[in-house]
Figure 1 (cartoon, one colour):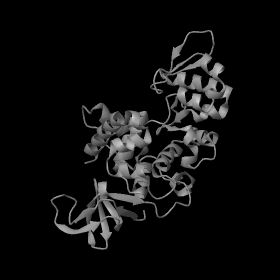
Figure 2 (cartoon, helix red, strand yellow):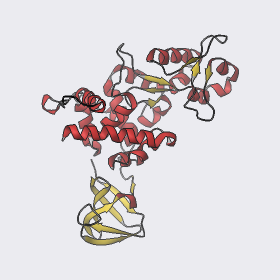
Figure 3 (spheres, one colour):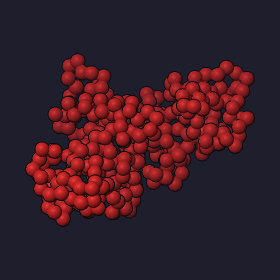
Figure 4 (cartoon, helix red, strand yellow):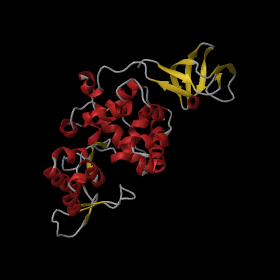
Amino acid sequence: MANSTGIVTASSLNLRATPSTSGTLVAQLPRGAVVEIVDRSGSWYQVHSPAGDGFVHGDFVSVVETEPAASFLFERDDLKAVPLAPSDAGLIKLPSGGTAAQKTVTQTWNTQGGLLQALSDLVALEPGAAVAVLCVESGGKGFGADGRMIIRFENHVFWDKWGQTHVDVFNAHFRFNPQKRWLGHQFRSDPNGAWLPCHTSQDVEWRVLAFARGLDNRAGLFSISMGGPQIMGFNNHLIGYEDPETMFANFSSDLRFQILGLFDFVKGSGTTSKMLEALRRNRFNDFASLYNGPGQAAEYGSRIQSFYTAFQGLKA
C-alpha cells in the first residue's frame, strides 16, 4: 500500500524516536507541517518529516487523501481469486474450554482468514480488527444454515425510502419507535392482523423483505443490511455498485463479495478514510460511530474490542 500523507493539527507536535511519550524527543513539528506516514504502531504514526524521521501521536495528525483509487476492490480479479480460508499452517486452534468470543473468532478466521489476511495486508490493517467487525455484525457468518444470506430489514429505513410518500400503506404494515428509530420494529402482512415483532429470526427478516419488495423492490433492498459485514443496501454507491440489486445479487452469491464489500466500505474510494484510520489505530468507538452511527457507538466499540482482544490472544 502506498504511504499516506498527514498534516499536523496541533500548535506544536513532538516527534519522538520511539512510539511513546517517554521516547527521545527528535524535534517539534509546527501546525501545518506535512509528514509522510510510513507505518502505524497503535495510536502512533511512524513518519518522514522535514525535521527528521520518527513517531508522532495520531490524535494530532490529519490523514489526507492523495491517491484516489482507480477501482473498487470487488472489481479486482486477483482478489476474487484469493483462497477464502487460510492455509493449514495459518489456522487457529481453539483451546480447550475456549470462551464464546474465542469460538466465534476461530470460526471466522478459519473459514475466511485467507482473504481477510490478503485484504488487511493491502490496506495496512491488522486482520484481527476486520475479524472483530465481522464477529460483531453477524457472528462472523455471511449465510444462514439454509444457504440464504444473513440480512436485517430496517423498518425506519423503509420509511425514509418509501413510507413517507405512502403513509397509509406503510402505517398499516410497519411500525418503529420514532424517538429511537432502530427500536420497536413490528410488522404485519394483513392490515387487520396482529402486530408481530421483527428481528426474531432470519425467516422473519426474509418475510418482511419479500413483502417490502412487493411494494417497491429497490426501496426494499435499500432497507436491509447484507451479509457478514451488514452493509446497508442504500450504501451501494459507496462500495462501487450502481444499484442495490447488483450488490444484493453479488453478496448473495459468494461470501468473497461480502468481505470485499467490507473493505471497500471501510477504505472508501481512495487509499484511506476516517473509518479506516480509526480501525487501524484501534479507536473502536470512533470506528463504530462512523460504521454504525453514533447512537450505540460505545456499545459496538466495546464489543469490537472484546473480539479483537480474543483474536490477538489466539494468534499470539
